[in-house]
Length: 369
View 1: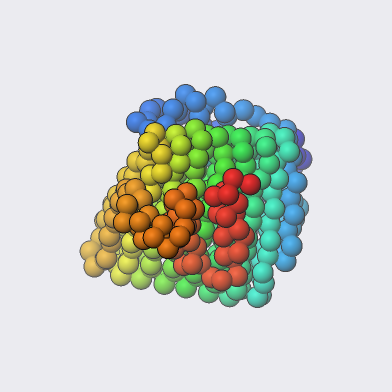
View 2 (view 1 turned 90 degrees about the vertical axis):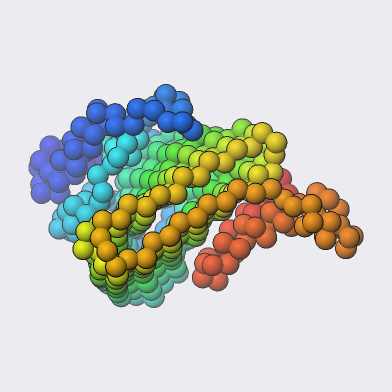
């Protein structure tokens, strides 16, 4: 275990982290999630195991520190972040916050392009933070990979005036939990991407907390699923102040017996006038036994806002196949082109600097390499 897990109040930083663990342990003990129509909660609960494992972490173009070192030097920063996080609504996120065995902080400043790699060679439970300093302009790509089970929570702080793109490739092949909370201060902007390609049984949630006036959260994410994998993906845009904007687009292409549920929610709190929010989720079914369930929702507690959601499920149309085959393209290749176009319509919403690894992975998945 890390040093912070064994200290009991030796310093302000240690006290802060120990109290954080205790609060989350209480939430976990309450087991807030009891059942689900689409995912086996029992199956997910079985994957919650304490671990002393460590991940291999690399960060090029950004500063990497241990959570212990950062908290000792910057206790007020961590205190602020933890106070602005949303308390977990289920035992899965709370378990990781209470039991992480590995942790780190990545800081981006100025104008930078950063690459992060988190590789799980053994079962590991991680809590980490990404901090984009005031007025910075950062494009960050991160890859989460490995063959071991991964339990991982990430909190991203986008400080006042910062402009950040964060693109995450999910390449872990085993069971996986991943929760990302993104906190946006005044006039901050985040373009977030999650690209899901692997994981046998996955539970994930992305929460955008628009805490500062004039903040903007864009989420453009994709899923390409095959085999008998299951993805339980959740998204929340939480508007807490005036004149904030969110737009989420999620597209899933599902082959074989792959299943997914996408539960998306726009929440607009009292006083968040001038909010403009849009949520779109679209699935393409490619296998007779593949299944997709989409649950978009709105919770609006104020007036003078714009909020919309939409959802569609489709299959490849015969007309599309005929058009491509009439130009000499084989049927299977034609299907791949259609799927590639479907997913890349989201990828091209992202800044050009982060598109390449996502497009390459789409190509690998379609080719079976």
